[in-house]
Length: 305
Image (cartoon, rainbow, N blue to C red; front, side):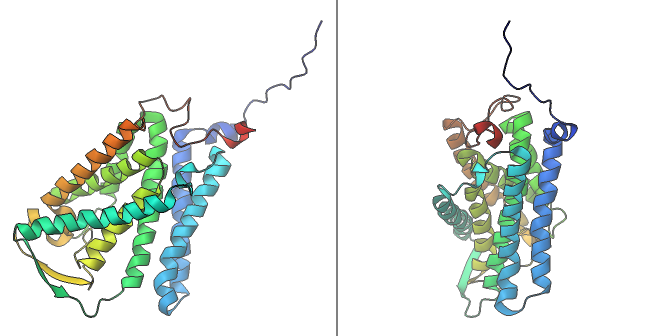
């Protein structure tokens, strides 16, 4: 007769079973990350002045959101947050900032070639550039954490890459409602922007490229070309120009994100990034990521020994 010395398996508690549910994880991660970023930004906005008032709320809010998300991943999902890995971050951030700026410039150049955009000179007195940079960093970090790291990643475990990408992009578009000048083309183009940003995550399995694309796009559009961003009134940026023509080309009050040319550019960029993701095995089928971590994600820390 032999006696097994192996410890008996301890069944998971009710709390552990609850936290293993995709829906619970999605809601918890969303709330924790959003609250940490928003409350930090609001607190510093109310208690700072001068240059610190311009920079601190956005930058500190972004840092708080990143820290809260990483803590959630460690405590609830019990793994390393490889989507925030430092390896490759500098390259992804640089490529994203350049890519976002290049995409906006491509649209503006196309509109100029069509006679829709007319460059009028440099702005000798650009305003709020530091504050705009901080705000764009905050928006890029918080929205990409919520829509890509939380919604897309967790839905992907359940529904697969394509459905998760579509749903997260649709939610991204709906979150921009209502906006000045919003119409069907504007909503469609904003959803296409969500597809581009989701494709950037799927292609790298890190968040840095999508964050930088998001921030680079917004900053270039509003603070370089002085054009409305998602229906928000344009600031006095570095360059001055005038848009004149039909709303389906100029975007009207919503800005270039309601232009048909922007839609074409975003779809082209999305197709390229999705092709990259597919070539790297980064697109997951439905219900096949539960048993095995997605590319770039580690097995739970507790199981790594």
